Length: 260
Image (cartoon, rainbow, N blue to C red):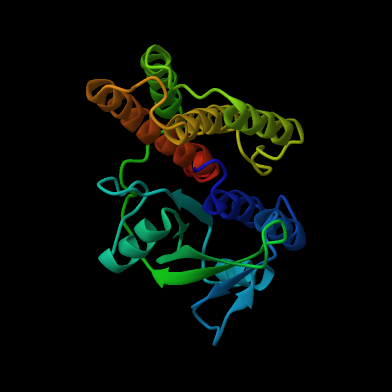
C-alpha cells in the first residue's frame, strides 16, 4: 500500500525546508513521523551515516534545490531516470527520492525490531548517484487529476459488479483509520504546496486505499476465473494511475517553482 510513502514525506518536508518555510527540526520530525529514527548513508563529504537534519543541510550545500518522488513498479519506472543500479535499488524498495540540482538520489531501507505492538522502525536512506535526465512517466497535476477521476469511475463500476470493492470489518477499520488520520491533518502536504496538489494527493490516497482493500479482500464474489481476471484487469490501471497521481502531487512544489 502506497498510502503514505516515506519518500513522499521526505520530499514534501525537504522541499519546504529548502524553500525556507519550515525549520530543520520541524522538517526532520515530520519526515520521521511514527518511525523511531531516520539516517542517511553515503552522502558526499560524510564518512558514515548522519541524521536527517545534517543530511538535509548537506544536500542544500551540495546544490540541491528540490526533491522529487519516484514510485516505480515492475515494468513501470515511474519517476526514475537511471542509472540501472539506482533504478534497481529503487524498484526493490518501491520508492525513492531524486534530487534537483545535484545528481543524487535516496532509497530507503526499512528495518523493524521488537515484539508485536511495540515495533521499533528505523530507516536508512542510501544516497546514490543518479542520471540527470527527465523522470519517467510523471504527469502534471492537471493530467493526474483527470486520469484519476476517470479511472476511479471505471474501476468502481467493475469492482462493485464483482463484489470486491472492499467491505467487511477489515475494510471498515481501514476506512475509519483513514478518516481519523485525514481529520488530524496527517495527510496534508508540507507548506509551500498548491491547494490542487493537496486535493490530488487526498484523492490518490483514497484510490490507493480502495485498490489495496480490493486486493486484500481475497476473491470476494469473483469466484469464476473470468471474473478474477476482470478484477485484476480493473485494478491494474487504476493502481498505476494512483501511483502517477501521488508522484505528481509530491512533486508539485518543484514543478511550481520551475514554472516560475
